[in-house]
Length: 108
Image 1 (cartoon, helix red, strand yellow):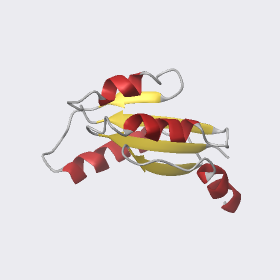
Image 2 (image 1 turned 135 degrees about the horizontal axis):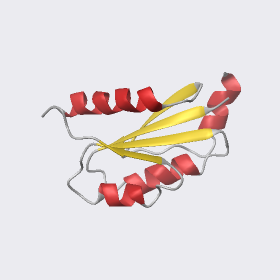
Image 3 (image 1 turned 45 degrees about the horizontal axis):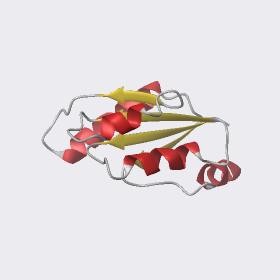
Image 4 (image 1 turned 90 degrees about the horizontal axis):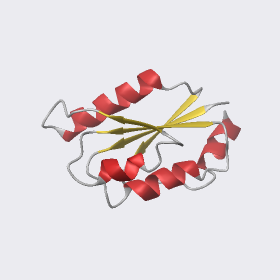
């Protein structure tokens, strides 16, 4: 069963690399990883682009001065282009343990 990991990011330069690596290092292989950056003003987008051969990288301007509106907007945009049977959300300052996706798929 294909799983999509949708990662949203805004100025999470300190954490985004560990976040992406945690998605890439899953013990489950049928994955699609989509990262949407919200026009970060730090070095986040450059870090994300280092992984562009392994993940889908997207950027979109902020639509609001409220962080929660922007994050929901990016989740919606990511969801529209995702192709997984299962969708997992991951924020740019968080990470998954290596067996997260295999555990979720086991239960499905």
